Image (cartoon, rainbow, N blue to C red):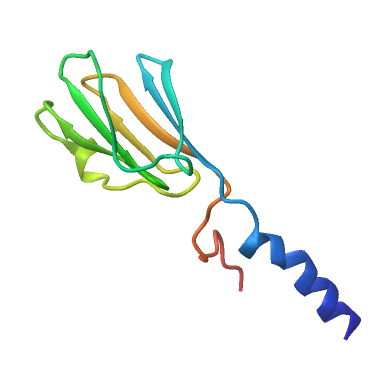
Length: 113
């Protein structure tokens, strides 16, 4: 019984702990903008001064590359980034958007049998 109580106490912060998410936008390896995704109210849009041009859109708790003038648009197809470790990169423009924080979906990283 005591083991169960201790296990529950140790797991509570994982499910109810802070979920501060930040997004880092880099161009050519240089950080040009850092956003706290938990503090954004409404919609935030950022356009890079790169060729091809890249438009990044952020809302509370998530961010995405919403438009890019590059030919393959793989960065746009990444969709919304809302978890620690999510990333979208536009190689022709040398733009990267990465999310850092503690928010995680309830999915295991690895399952061992």
